[in-house]
Length: 73
Image (cartoon, rainbow, N blue to C red; front, side):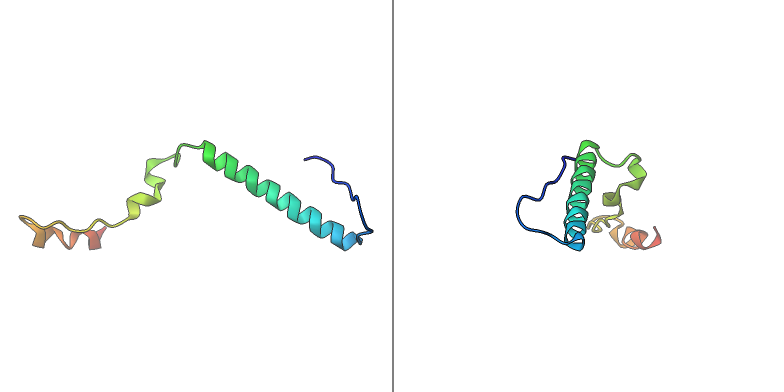
């Protein structure tokens, strides 16, 4: 991170600490977002949250029997 300079005014130590905390938190969040965007997805397909979405039962032969299967998973 580049050094930060106060160009105008006389901030108190508390104000400087607040500004530095916000800037470092934003930098950490940006770094985490960049790291997350580099990954192709979950490392393990079983950890994928999308697979937890429940599919709607389809009409057809034996639909009455398979409609309750989602409740048993």
